[in-house]
Image (cartoon, rainbow, N blue to C red; front, side, top):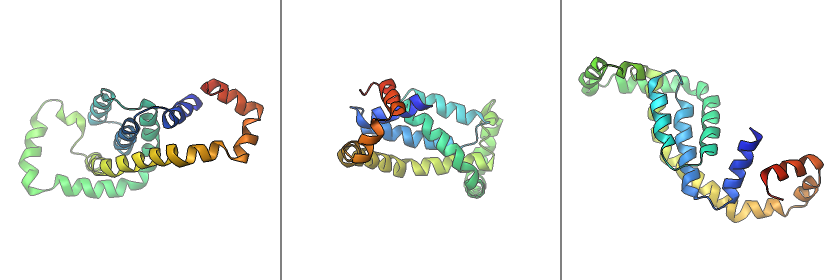
Length: 170
């Protein structure tokens, strides 16, 4: 896990396109919010792996999203119930259930549908927030933290030197 965090820091500091990091955060949030026991989750995961994104940020956001999603299950259930009971879509959902293997996506589960819809709605704001975060980090925070007195003292610690050598920064 430490190597993954160091890889993410390298991406933030390196010449990685901010859009790749931002897409990774947003896509990871979609998957992190969704329950993991359905085909829809695996289909979205495989689809996203074919997109050019930072895989470390993607995995970290899946973990972060999975850790906070149980707190929002009630909201996801309400949104999923609202969407799945729309009269105008009832015939469409009925026909979907007749298609083989579509039921394995569990789209008819209110929590799955609600979390997927919330992830899709949150995609654009999370993308913008991640782009802003990368910009602020690269423009202001990285140099400030790197040149601070506290970081100079911390960098002299043997354990930190070992971690920095693992990251290839020294």
